[in-house]
Length: 461
Ligand code: SAH
Ligand code: SF4
Ligand code: F3S
Image (tube, rainbow, N blue to C red; front, top):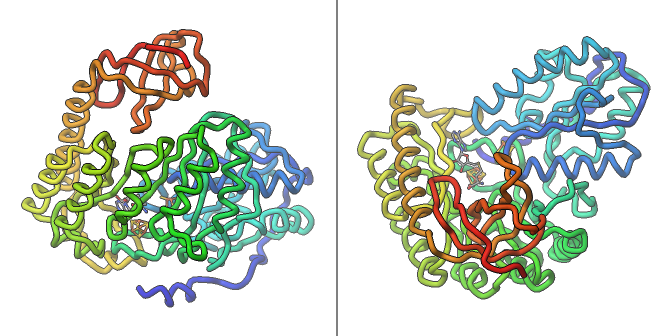
C-alpha cells in the first residue's frame, strides 16, 4: 500500500456516539505498557500530559480511576496478549463500573472503532499522535458518558514541548523522532505510527540537560530509524555529538538504525566521544539477498557487511546486536542457512529473534505466508540456539577483562548482588560492595554465560 492510501484509514470524527457511565473523579491514572521502547517513552509523555492536567499517576491498578493500555501491533501475539488482558480488565470494570478504560498506541491506531464496538469494556481509543486530546476526551466521557476515539496521524506532532514524567532511575528513554517512512514489507509501524518527523535539536538538548540534572546516567535516544533524523541542517550524527557534548558525564545510546543509511560520519561520531556507547543495534532481518529484497529492506548482505567492517575497523571494541525474522514468505532452507551464516560471520553480541507474523495492510500481507508453522518454529529455534552459543563464547572470552559499569541497582535474583551495565550494553553482576545506583565502577569479569557477565569491583571512583 502506498502511503497516500493511509489517509483513507483516518476517520475524522472524535466522539463515537456510544455512551457509558463512568467515575466522576478525574485523578488516579494507571498506564500499562506493551511493545517497544518508543511505547514506553510515549507512556511517559502521556503521564506528562495527564500530570499537567491535574491527574495523579499511580502504579497500582486497584487504586486507579482510569486505566490506559498502551499497545503494540508488531506481531499477532503482541495483540493477542492485550486482548487477553482486556478480559481481565473486564473484571475490574465489573467491580467498579465507573472505571474508565482506554486503549492507546499502535493497536488503537490499527483497530480504531472496532475496539469500542467489539470490546464493550473499552471507553476510549487514542492513536500515538493524539495524546494531547486525552484530557478533553476523558472530561467529555465523564461529563456526558460519550465514548471517545481519536486516531488521526500527524505529520508534525513530536510532543517536543511535553516534559515526560519518568520513574526515577539511572536510565532514561528520550524520543528524538517519530514514525517511519521505510515501509519494510512485513512491518505495520508505518501504518500505526505514521510519517517520519524529527524533534528540533534544541528541544532534545534541553531535555537531555534536564535529565542529567535529575540524576540519569544512561540515556537512549529513540526513533524507529534514527538515521533519518533531520533538524534544519543537522543530521543524526550532529544530534548525537551535540548530546555527547551537552552532558559529558552521561552515557548516550541510541536505537534503532537502519543499515541502508548508517553513514561513515555516524560511525566516526560514535568513535570520537567517550560518552557515546560503543554499542550498535543494526537489524539484518535475513541473511539472504532474495529475502531482503522481498522484505523491501533496500540493502544487500554485501552492503550490510561493508558497514559492519567499517564499524569494527573504527570501533574495535564495539558490541553489536540485531533483529532476525524467521520464516518470511518464500524463505527456503537455503535462505535460512544464509541467515545462520551471517550470524556466524558477524558474531553478534545479542539478537532479538522472531517468527514472521503477517500483518494486515502491509505489502507482505498480499504474499502467501507459505512457510508452515512447524518449519518457522524449528528455524527460529536454530537461530536462537546459534545465538546462545555465540553469546556464551563471546561472554566467557571476556573473563579477566576490565570494564567500567554504571550500577543500576540490586540484582533481581539476589539481594547480595548488584547489577550494572557496560558501555556495550552487557549486564554485569557483582557482589554488594557499598556502591549505589548511579555509581561508576571498574570491574574485572570472572565468568560469563550467554546472557550475563559476573565480576568483582576493581576500584570505586
Ligand atoms: N525500526 C526498527 C524495528 C522496529 S520493529 C528497525 O527497522 O530496526 C522491531 C523488530 O520486529 C523488527 O526489526 C523485526 O525484526 C520485527 N518485526 C517487525 N514486523 C514483524 C512481523 N510482521 N513479524 C515478525 N517480526 C516482525
Ligand atoms: Fe518497520 Fe522497517 Fe520502519 Fe523498522 S524501518 S519500523 S522494520 S518499516
Ligand atoms: Fe509495537 Fe508500535 Fe513499537 S507496533 S514495536 S509499539 S511502534
